[in-house]
Image (cartoon, rainbow over all chains, first blue to last red; front, side, top):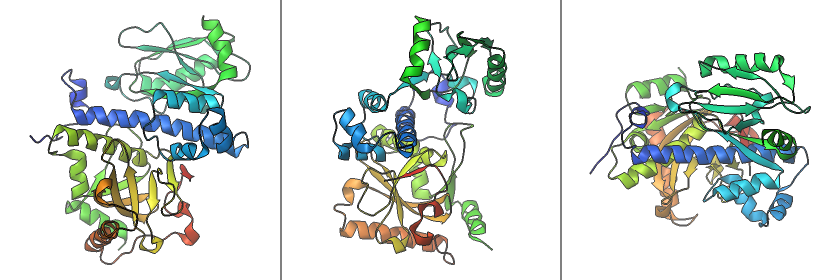
Length: 198
Length: 177
């Protein structure tokens, strides 16, 4: 049997029919690569600042430095646990939210100031995802906003909401967005937000 | 005339194919122009669903390059075995490989840089078929890549980095290991 892809890439993903093996594999590779990129960015940033070395990180998570060097090259046979260990070894944890492929892309909506502080909430409704964003060193900042057109308006609405936000108040944003976004947040800064949410 | 003109001609002749990110709207920061044999890996037809799945992973790995994401580059041949990209030995031949390592079988895509951030992906092989690092199979793979380049661009050479600076090949978002 031969199979081929002659139709727009997402059409059968969005059709509700069985997703072809190649598409499933593509998104698995994409997610793994994004995990790896996140780890790589974080490690390079910290190592350039002199805050961590390969040897230190390897020691912290109970691995050999040569294993860490291999993981810097590619994710290989990473597991979610590996990714968690690596970020935790640097004092970080991943923050995730999901988004709908059908609604367009939002990969450009996260300003650098926000990138480290995106949280999923437990208030998800069908067809949308709520995320909580906090910013800055002063604690949690935010207000509630709704974006009707994520790819166009979220940045503006985010900035607008943050400008008028009250300190120590969660910023809730309701979006319907297209992909899986992964960020790393410093644990000591996230802790307060998490406490507020409980 | 420039190599850009030649690339455009090869694309019009359908001897090269511009790979674009699979997802609509994804950024296109770097460029891969693929030979027809690599293009077939990406678009099919595939001999079975197992190979279709493997090629799906490959496409995800190639999109990592195209979308300008952070990639690890091995600075020396035979080192950095897990790196995303490597210039093969001998460096003067300017043959590079992109490694799609997982899942088994690992796939190697061979090519050369036409300009900074413009990779011409010419040939490929399963890693398992290439044997050891100094094998005849590796040499043949390099030669096949060079031959394919000469067929496509007889009047042009790939770019050569000045002093071994890898930023002459890829402008940003690289980690050297």
